[in-house]
Length: 73
Image 1: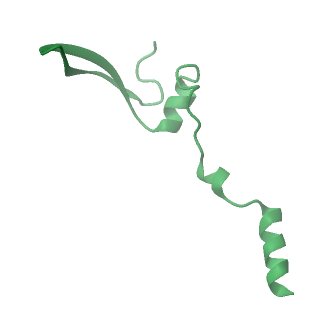
Image 2: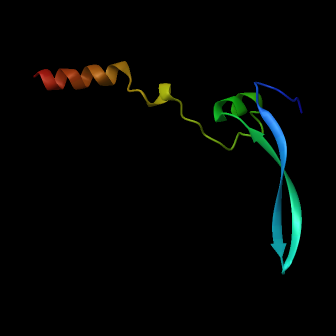
């Protein structure tokens, strides 16, 4: 794995999991950064995610013209 790809930060985090009353430390790998950068840098690992950008949320030009024509008549 390449480190410092797209300015993402990699570090480890230790959590304490309790199994049958026994506390066991577990170490997890953490990637920190914006979702769109993570998806570009590692498309296979984040293929389960769907990400919607602001451009996807904007109405199409045809849709806005159809709405404005209805309001004028």
